[in-house]
Amino acid sequence: MLRSMLLCRLTPHVLSCRRASCLLAGRTPNSLQPRSPALTPPQLSSHESFIPKITSLVKYSDQSAQNYTMIYTLPHIKLLRALSRLKLLQTAITGVLLPPVYVMYFQGYVTFFLLGYTTGLALLAGVMLYTASHFVRRVVGMMYLDPSQSTLKVSHLTFWGKRRDFQLPVSDVMTTMDTGDMPNEIILKLKRYSTPETMYFSTYYGRVVDKQGFERVFGKI
Image (cartoon, rainbow, N blue to C red):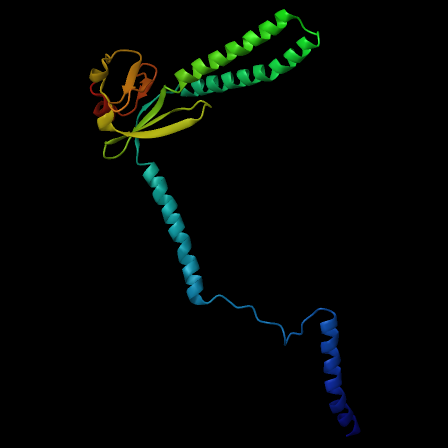
């Protein structure tokens, strides 16, 4: 009986000591730890329903981009892209080498002939780059038609050799009869009624993928 009385008296003191040691050590007793709120079923259902909506939007955008039908392609557009980037690299290298040549000339290490030769080479590279980019940017790489055959998407290269697409209404595109080109000519013009800008394509070097769609835009070939 004496033993049970001692246990009853010592038990509160032992518990208080354990709680104090836990607080000093930075731990929280299990009975005092807050419970993390769990996700309720409505929250879970709304989170799960949000993922299919994003997936459906992505699929819809992909399908809308794939609805265009290719009517013309130029396989040699890759060579023109490589040529454009090669001219950019050549011009950049020439521009980097030109300042050191001027410094060496003023210090007396190189002759005036070498200075003039390097300067002329840099100017020639710049002129060739401008001429090449002016031509390459006007070459049509690919053409597409939308399902209603009322919008034409044209693909060509930029100054940096990257692809650029733009759209225009088919009613704004001149036929080969309006541009004055003969169907058997090697280089044909892509002209519009609303702007004097002219682009070029070739049925000789290129390939007409969809003849019916191509004739819908440019007339009989």
